Length: 140
Image 1: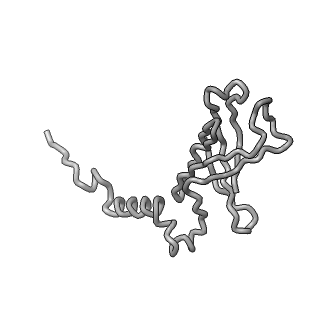
Image 2: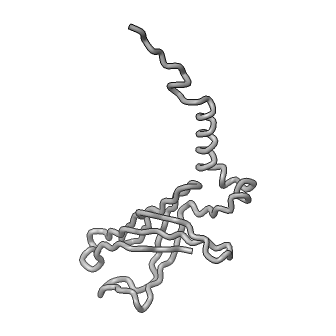
Image 3: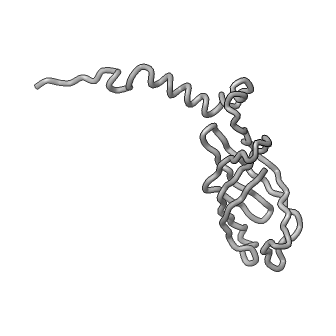
């Protein structure tokens, strides 16, 4: 009976595979944000924690007893070159999570917009007047 012995090439793949994976991972996580690399990619960097003020309009569906004034929110964006996660949007009354997020560069003005689908869950004491909601959101 003969025995087949795996060579390192059979087990680990071609020698060029691991350096290519390491370079790709480094670019995806960090290198694309470096100033001299970022000039060539043109990909917006929006990662971090952002504070925003949400102001309801007259068309907003706010139940009686709800906050009709400006609402301070915080949004944390985790970003690599190929992925974007907008999680969660937090207010004094609720927290949201995103199911899908993308960056849209609109009209060549240099302004990028983050768009995402959200699932909002109010804190227990606010659920009577503020039910859970889902929908699209955007931020410039």
